[in-house]
Length: 233
Image (cartoon, rainbow, N blue to C red; front, side, top):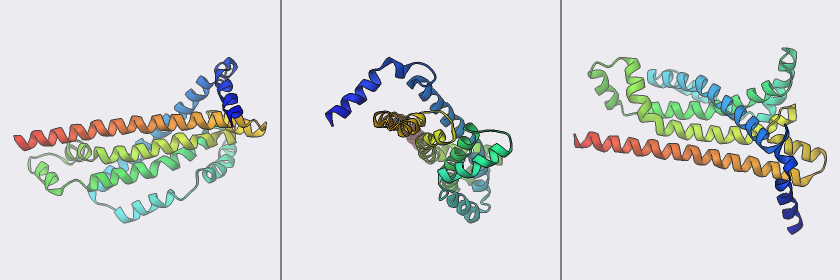
C-alpha cells in the first residue's frame, strides 16, 4: 500500500504530467469548460420553462413526471445513443455526445427544483404584489424568483456535481477531460494513472460542491436579512 501511495505521489510530482495537451492543467481546463457549458445550456433550457409553468400552474404533474423519468436514463446510455446520431450528422466523436449526455443529466434537477421553488412561494405574497400593480413578468422576476432562489441553487448544486463527475465518461467517446487518465490508465493497466484521474475528478467535484454550498449560504443569509428588514418596517 505504501508503495502504491508513493507511486501516486511520484505521478503528481512528475513534470511530464503537468505539461502539454495531456497535462493536468489542460485536462482540468477541458473538464471545467465542458461542465460549465453544459450547465449554462441546461440552465437556459430548464429554468425559463420551469418558471413559466410554475407561475402559470400549468401541466405540473405531466411535466414534472416526464422530467423525473429522464433521471432514470443512464448517462452512458445517452452517450451510446447520441454517438451514432452525431456521427451520422457529421458532428463527429467526443464533444457532442458528451455534451448531450450532460444536458440530459443536468436538466432534471434544475427543472424540478426551480418548479418546486416557484410553486412554493406563498400565494399571499404573490397576490399582494399583484395588488400593488405589478405585471406577471414583474411578479416572476421581482418576487417569485428571488424567493425561490435558495431552492433553485440546491438544484444547480446537484446538477453541477453530477455533471462534473459524469463528464469523465466523455473519454469513452474520444473526448478529453480528466476521464482520459482513467480510460488511458485502464488501457495500459496503469492503476496509478487511473487512481490519479479519479482523485482529480473527486477533488473537482468536491470543489464544485463547496462553491455552490457557499452560494446557497450567501443567498439564504441575504434572504433572511431581507425578511427581517421587512418585518421591522
